[in-house]
Length: 280
Image (cartoon, rainbow, N blue to C red; front, side, top):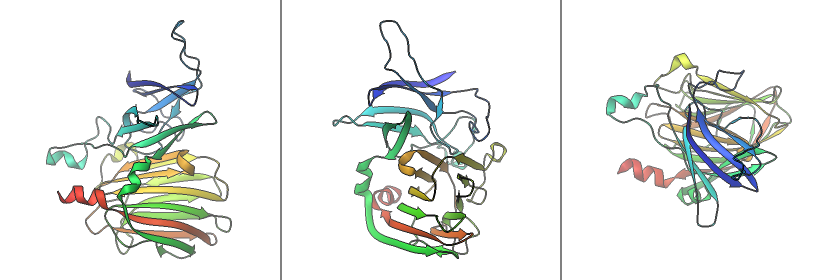
């Protein structure tokens, strides 16, 4: 079954978003119960009812992304929301009589036959208390002031190291965290929530991976909320989305380099709007 079909045209190409049920895992792809992805091809031939397109592209490499829908802004940007949850998984919030939420809105573009996603630019109005980051990392380093909701925009220079590890939503001794592993030697990024907090959906796996060519440099944009992490790599070429349920004291962010020294530069912000929502 193909749920939530959504056809539109972008940058002169036809795009069909949908959520197929029943795809079998293929290596690191299609590891969730149900998937969301797209076909990209020539604009739909309405007269002959033909859509010539390339292979199916999985849209998110994380755990909890499904049932997308898009719309146009007044200035003609295509914006996507996804349901931040998947059917048949019982999330820890169920006992409080609610389940699921939405991802942040994402701007869509097409580059080299691939759909890219980036946080909608309007989200920048939530930023407050900027902290400039320029760290030469070898041993474990704290990246920012502890906070519940944060955004990071970072450049990682990996020329002199083999692996960089970011622990998001960590406690003070870094024994609980949501971990992003950037493995330069294998050109793979892995997200694990084994130590994120309240455990759930263990039988579906606690780690997700994606191989792609990022060389010696990686761009990261990370949005962290009370129970979610959204990670955009290389300008939205690869995205990881995950629901997490950390303890109240898990507010820190740590970074560690292995096999040499890395340099991490960028900015961290608190997200004031999200905090106001939580307080209401």
